[in-house]
Length: 140
Image 1 (cartoon, rainbow, N blue to C red):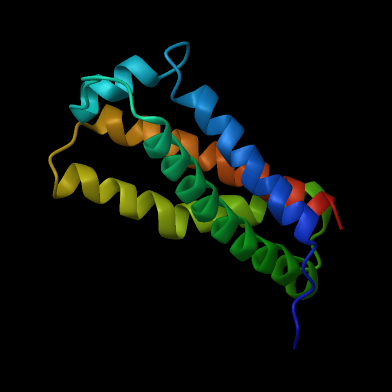
Image 2: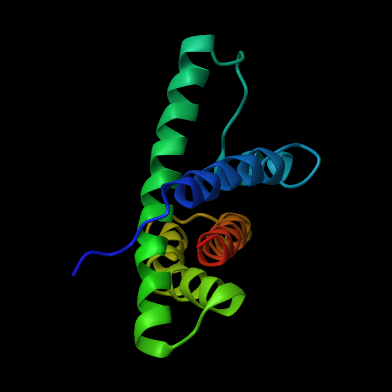
């Protein structure tokens, strides 16, 4: 069975992830606190090549996640009979809870990162996956 994919919705969802990430990790929101908790310092700004690499790789990661969320929303629609915003929220939430949150929680368990660090990252990914799921599920 071929899963229908709205490529524009997948791209828009990936872009939403990038926009949300720029805002979430800015100094206006959680950037300063996240850098402190992660131990990251700004010893010189990244070069233009480094920035381009980070943006391209970040978009690639977001694109793959949006692509998989597309499949989840199709499943929710076909199997559970859920459509629109509820399908997007459900797909985003369950994928976050089952895959992203446990992976991020391992930073606390094995890397000894503070729980606040995990909450900042988890909050971003939960918000992002909910937004991406809604974009994909509504834009059919």
